[in-house]
Amino acid sequence: MPVQWFPGHMHKGIGQIRENIGKSDIVLEILDARIPWSSRNPMIEKIVENKPLLIVLNKSDLADSSVLKLWEEYFKKNRSNSDVVQVSAITGKNISGIVEKSRYLCREFEWIGKRAIRAMIIGVPNVGKSAILNHIAGKKKQEVSNKPGVTRDLKKVKISERLHLIDTPGVLWHKFEDQEVGEKLAILGSVRDSILYRDDIAVKALALLKKLYPVNLSERYGIELKTVEETAPDELLQIIGKKRGCLVTGGIVDTDKVSRIILTEVREGRLGGLCLDRPDGLH
Image 1: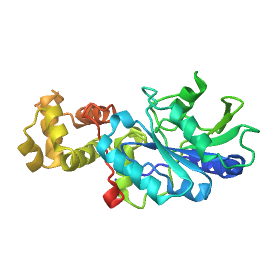
Image 2: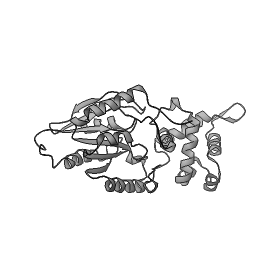
Image 3: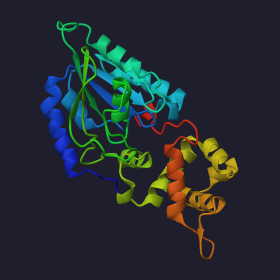
């Protein structure tokens, strides 16, 4: 089933971003470090145009550091007046770097030092925008959840006399031209599980892991590496289900239950650092 999700509040969110982009000095684009390409909203890039852009690779503690380094080089090379910072809203790692690099990108504006920098935070659902804002603010100012689509209205937060933040709703786009992009967003929770066939998404996750991280998959679920490499993803789902005791009457695997387990463990980093996008092929 094609992965699509664009509820009414996202359409409203795009409108709010368009209306307020002119009031911001810099844009902080929050990406999921495990899918730096797939978590970029192409609609936002057109709206931002030539404003200074700081790409914030959040959840870097859950990502493959070697691949993430390549993505950092890619983003720096492909856009002027921009920079990249790797952070973790979970651990607080390098959050201060967001403020420092924002000031640096705005250093040549004639008003710098005379008023606060106005930074707009944008990103798709569930990349951690509100959690990052909370860290910068030093206290809880936003509702945070691991469910996509919690922030539904634009919110302005005064951090200090030198920095004001504009938090925007997480917005996807109307149609994923590349279906793999939608699948990766679904695997990592940027699309609500309730609108999908969970076992389909789990099988897609296993297919990617088999291709990119077969050793991680083998070690996490106690399956011989050769078996991982030679077994179809839907059959791997069955094997993992039996190993985890996800069975119903007659010894049949409860595919929904084992799919929940697999997706939860991928999202929580229990298979190690992952990066499902690769810059050599753009995704």
